Image (cartoon, rainbow, N blue to C red; front, top):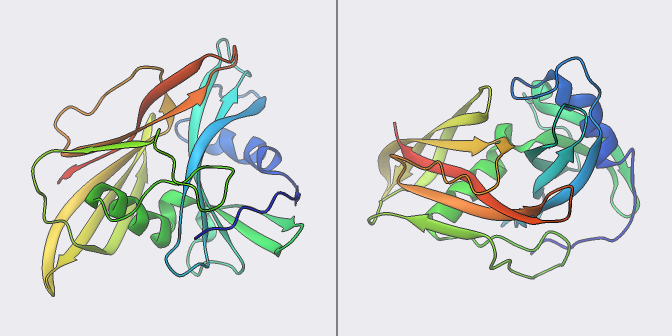
Length: 222
């Protein structure tokens, strides 16, 4: 169970993302500094209780029209070996001390738990409350896929999302190769899950405070 500490992080998440977002392939306002506000999201629990995981949504007013970005984050108490390219920044947490904050699509703990959500073995949690499942985050999977645990993953950014090719193991032997696509640029009402075996849908708030929903991630066979 993740414990949500209502305390400070210095620098804050929005400040760190303001510096990091313009370098992403999917950033929609090149040449402009992001103007970010927090808009929603959810969390997942690390079974080992070591890594914080947040699927954060931010609204950006820097471009000609507002854009909502989906940024999975992980929070660690020590650097993740080999993930220097995925480091968003470091911050001082008011309770836990120094935290290393990563793009979660490169963190094996978050990817394994995202796959567990697709399998039905993990439940999304409320973004701001400890030990509280979030029933507004929904999972839909077709058939009865025999997806096992994650062995390895390769991540690649595109103009609208991030593709993660995952190798799995099931029943002690090789499993399947899957691709999990994480939506980065959220579009209200978008349900682009054609050809996928499963998808996860969640909500956030637009700049005018209207509620919106879209697919945050899909999974399918390679």
